[in-house]
Amino acid sequence: MKKPIINYVWMQFEKGRIQPLPSHLFYNVQQNAKRYPARKFIVWVQDSAAIGPYHIPENVEIRTLDSIRGFSDMPVMKLNGEEYGWAKVDTARLLVIRHILENENCAAIYSDMDVPDVRVDASPLHLRLRKYGIAIGASFKGASFKGAKPSRKNIGKSSENGYIAFTNGTKDLLDLTIDACGQISDYGARLAVCDKQFEVISMWADAKGIANWQKCIASFPVLPPGGYINTKPKAQLRLAA
Image (cartoon, rainbow, N blue to C red; front, side, top):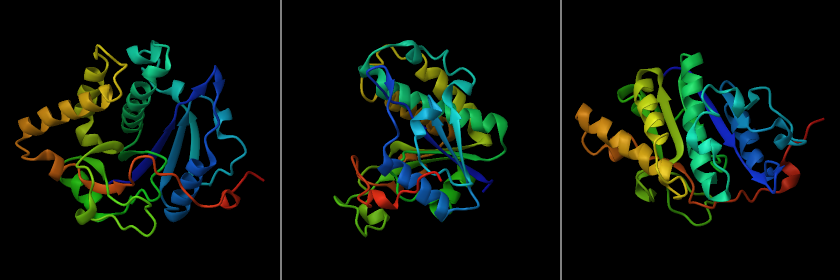
C-alpha cells in the first residue's frame, strides 16, 4: 500500500467563538502519532487557536480548512445554523481527502478523533485499498471499549463514515461523491451527506460488479461505539513546553 496520511477534522464554533479541541480527543491524536511514528498525521481546523496548549508531536501537522481548494465554495459551508454542523463536518472530511490526493501520491485516510487506534498498518485495510482503492470503517460492539479487540465477531455496523480511506486510483469516485454532496436539497438532516456518500459508492460498486460492497469495501472494524469518550487521565495529555 502507498504511504498513508491520516487526517483529522475539528469544526466547531460555540456562540461565535472558537471551541477548543477537547483534551480527550487530542490525547488520541498524540497516542496514534506515538504508535505510528513513521506515519504522517494532519489535524485540520478552522483556526489554529483551537489546538490550545497541546504538545504537537513531530509527525503531526496543524492546517486550516480554508486552505483547501473549493472548501468555502461548497453550498453547505455558506449556511448558518447548528442544524448544518454535521453536514459541514461530513463534507469537510471528503474535501480533506481530495486535497491530500491532489498533492500526494498516497493513501489518504480520514479518521474521527475518538478512534483510539487508527490501525493504519492493519492487513484488512491494506487488502481493501489494494483491491478496491477504498476502505470504510465499521464500529464494533462493546459498551466500555476497555480491552475490546476489533474483529469480525463483534462488528456493530457494516459501514461508518468516521473512518474513510481513498487512494489516487479512486479519486474519480471521490470527485463524484463530492459533486453529489454539493447538490443535496436538505443539509439539515443529520445523515444527509453520509447517506449521499454511501449512495454514490453503492452505485459505483454496482457498476464495477462488486457484490455486497459493504462487506468487501467497508466493515473494517476500527471504530468504537458511538459516543466513546477516552477515560485516560487528563494528566497524561502532553502540553506544549
